[in-house]
Image 1 (cartoon, one colour):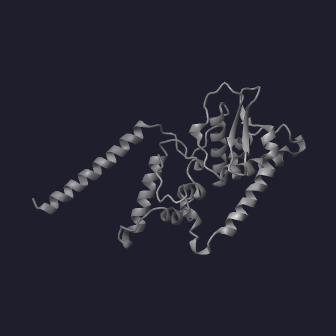
Image 2 (spheres, helix red, strand yellow):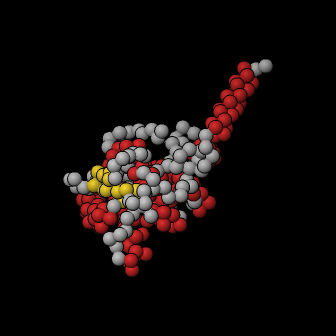
Length: 258
């Protein structure tokens, strides 16, 4: 048998082993798709924030049916009943923008606590925070005082964005779809959701295909994209805000998503 034939058989065997390993892992872990937003869970500070961000990430991706789940995470007692239908979603969208402006460390939020209040520090000004409070029905929600403060915090966010935009060096602008680890992950997953409506073009941007012959890049990229999605779908929901954005990644040139 020629050496080339031996190498070819060895390569095929290695590939089959790798595929078998991935299939084995996929069968071992839970089979709940990663991008399916779970039912509202308000049992702890971590659960409430996870529910809110997951729901709003889905809404941002085009699924407005999850907006109600996000609104359920807010204590709307301070809003007149006649304005709830409009103010609730508006406050949820503004709060989402505020949280999306920073990295949220879900693992730092307790899944069990004897306290009835918990604060999430914000990067918007000194001593700014969001308050979560345990209600009498044993559910955790963003407190009414925080909900009432959202418009002010949102205005601070808009001002901060204007100041940042004015300071950007035009020569250093990059494609916003790939401007940070969070942006790249979001571009990939949202592109996968609208694959047949042009999403594939965004998806391919998120892969470094420079070492693949140009004639094969699209084919190899599509295969890699589908395999990666199959793997992610077997693990927990990807919450974008746990991944650093441009402001948090700083000068780092790599990031590992665990």
